Image (cartoon, rainbow, N blue to C red; front, side):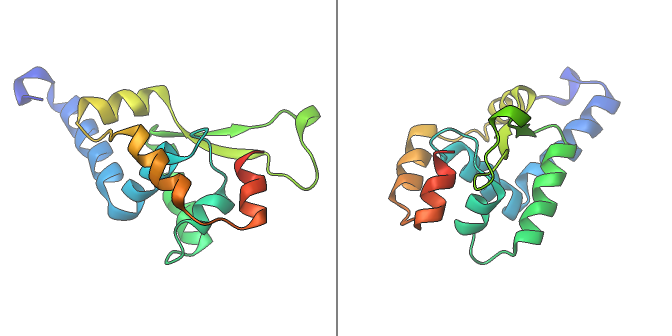
Length: 131
């Protein structure tokens, strides 16, 4: 991206979005989302694969990614919800995917999914993964 390609206000917007996605925890969460088999993990799954972060911290970082338009929340319709399974998932938005690709921040999805697949998971996490 060259500075002459974008007007100043758009450059500021790009700078802010880059600041959001390149922060270490948020970037790790993006990689976790991309590595998930369906690219739609739950908060509980993201918490599980990031044991050094609290669920509250993960939730706050996810919200910043949602606010920046990089991540979207996907809710199951009421008629498909089950009491013991999650209904809220997190995925990369279309504009988020384009932004990551444009700025060379989109990593090899196959590799991320292979890494994610190697993570030892509890019974609950396996259930959430296939929800």
